[in-house]
Structure formats: structure tokens, C-alpha cells
Length: 238
Image (cartoon, rainbow, N blue to C red; front, side, top):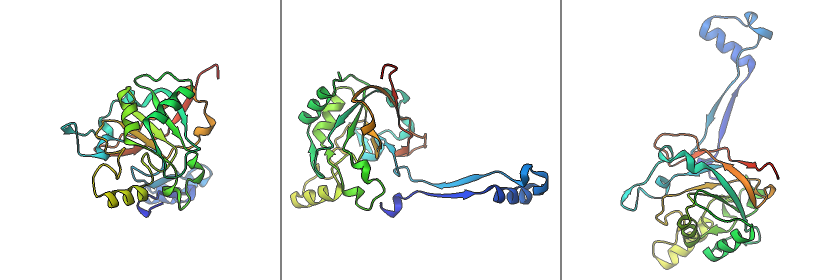
């Protein structure tokens, strides 16, 4: 994991809290229950660390001739809707997922895709989360497949790999060799107003369909992304 994407947490203990209370308010620990004060934490967290939701502003400053939205400007209804898991765990690292393959996988999941659905791509690479080569693992969703989802009303799509695109070192090699735009970060910069969830875990525990996804991002003003606790709510008959 690149250093700039590492999360750091500093924990304040009950003992530390008692000392802080005495410093701030002059109340000694003898006047506190069990001689303990409060606990608290200081969190250093980037908006793209861990599981997060990207906003269009992350991809480009303008899309369709208009300023792209930041994470706090997106409609909340995008982030709560029927889910479907499409399984691409058999894909090799670096493979591109095409629109034809994606359409076949949705059909194979027994799901009838509708506007507002949240599509989750299972690669199985969450097994490598936290390892040094995690960023280089997994297939990626192509620009055409991203557009295929968007054209069917999908505005939120997610993946259990480090990123939605193919591993960036591979895209970089291709872009430098061909010397043209539209190769590096192709699915991000496809020119569409959509959100993607990256670094999901546990998709293998879900049924292909028959559940609802809640993936509300933290409301960070003017931000290109935000952390989210992504939850699948299974239907009662599951």
C-alpha cells in the first residue's frame, strides 16, 4: 500500500482520559468512576484509503461540459438499492472485463438489471487486502463495460480489488507504448457521471442477487471520494 494511503489511529486510554480531564477541568481522577476518564481516538484517514466511494470529481474536473460533482453533491438515493454480484474470480490479474462478459454475468446471476441497481464485481482479490502486491492484482472493468452499466441506469458500481480499472502499472505500460489518451485509467475517465466503490471485501459470502446494498459515503465537503461502510441487507427469504 502506498504510504499516502495508509490509515493511522492514535488511541487515548481511560487513564490518559483521566489525566486530560484533570488538565482541562481540574477534576482529579479520584472524583471519576473507577478513576477512569474518557477514551477517544485521533484518525488520519485519506478519502481513498480502505473501502471508499469515488465521486465524478475524482475522474475529471468536467464531464459533459459541466463541472463534475464532488462526493457531498451526489444524491443519497444512489447509495441504497438492489444489488447484484457478478463473479469474475476466474479472470487473471490484468485481464479486462468486457461489456459482453458483464452482460453474460448479470444474466448468469439471475438478475434483471434496472436503473438504480448497484452492481458489485467479485474478483476474489480481497484475499490479498493489505499485502504489498494488492495494488497489482485483479482484473479490471473496461471503459465499454462501465458505459454498458451506465447506459442501463446503474450509477454505483463496485469491486473487491484495489481499483475499478486494470492494475495501473499495466495500463501505464500500454499507454506509454501506444502514446495516446484513453488507455491509462480508461474506466475512470470514460466521461460518465457515476460512482464506484473500491476495495470491497466479502462479496463471496453474498448470493448473486436478492439483497439490498447500503453504501452511503461520509459527507466530506468538496471531496473526490469518501470512506463508506458498505452493507448488504439480505431479503427475508434468504
